[in-house]
Image (tube, rainbow, N blue to C red; front, side, top):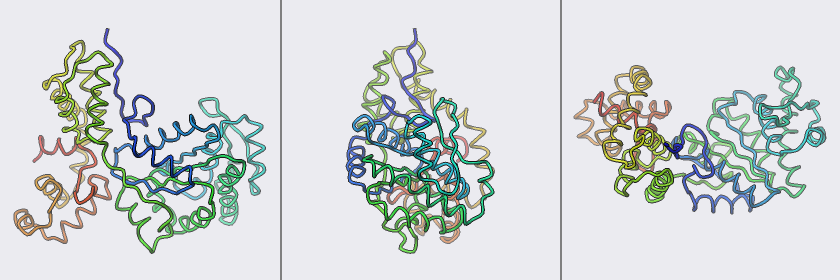
Length: 382
């Protein structure tokens, strides 16, 4: 009988599927308990969302009075949508019954009368009158002020409250700096509440929080989320295969990390496919790993072709330069001469590729956000 696959990807992971980030968890717990705002940023697929969920889960186990409210800014396209999702997410996080939720929100919301619906899991969720979507600007401003009192009211009752805004850089797509300024005016006064601002477009996150001209400058402690230490990933892989009655050497586990560049998402993706391909075979071999890589490249080929065909010639050339130079020293004179490209043109293409989230910056290097897209280009195109 084949064991259940011990690896998972494509969704937020917690519990046994979460790869240990002991140092980061310890530091974040300390920050939240001391009501410190934290800015988490790093490239896509590094496990920031999973880290937040695992952090909240761990804090709930340690402290029954902890309330963690998670809000994904990819869902938000207007101030009104932000208000609705904030209230909805807060009510879900409370875990109270219908009457208690209604009583709490009626005491806070002065602009609208809240109502409670039930989500797909049977949990009560606060909602507003459907007409709210067409509320005048002044009414939205008042309701935003009401909703932003939720964390304070909870903290006043002795709760430890943390609000996590994931993919926060997406706020720049809304109404310029206006919502940023409004949120800053509320957050800076909430001394007994902590906020986590997480984002994967590192150049936008740096601008939001490190640029003195932006409203969120100096609003919290900036923390870069790096790759998980390869040693920890090797331990994670070894245990996962071992618990599923598979034999894997340390060298083979290291090879998996090397191929996936130790990026948590892609490490789990590759390990997942390796386990499936291994079938009833007990030992994980190099041939199995190679088959899994080829399977991933083949299955994602249509997606990668679409990305490649929609790039300009200069962007394609920029990607080749990044690959051939291992992401460093791409503007040196020899490289520019070899690829017949001006420094300004290359710089513009790199910025465009960052905006498309195809590449990103890590320390002093340019990296691919999708490790297997890079592998596909090397094997199929370049």
